[in-house]
Amino acid sequence: MPMDFSTYIMQINDALNAENGPNLAYLLRPTSPHGKDLVKSLRSPTVVSMAQYKGCISSPWDEVAIQYMLTCTNIAHGRSAEAFKQQSALVS
Image (cartoon, rainbow, N blue to C red; front, side, top):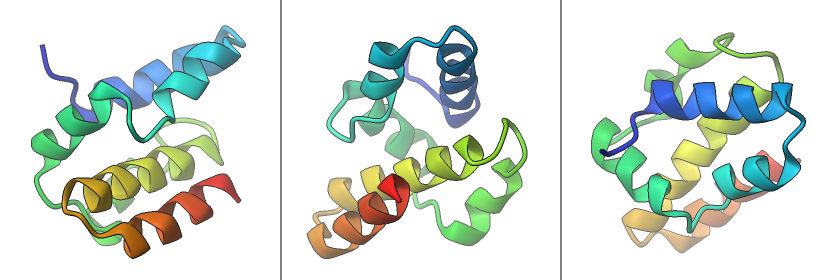
């Protein structure tokens, strides 16, 4: 079953609460299979459309999840420079 963004955010929150670093790393890897599912579920997310998810989980992890989604979208559409910018924002 494909993952949607709400499920993704809850999985990040669960990994944080369980202090499960390996799972969190998997969830934030842009080449993980769930990245493609997220892109399909949201079609063309933007910073503005993703703002509704701010505050869903504790800061800064809400913003990390949003940046991850934008990174995956840019990768899926072959926009490497934009993907790099989003990934850099995610990491910092």
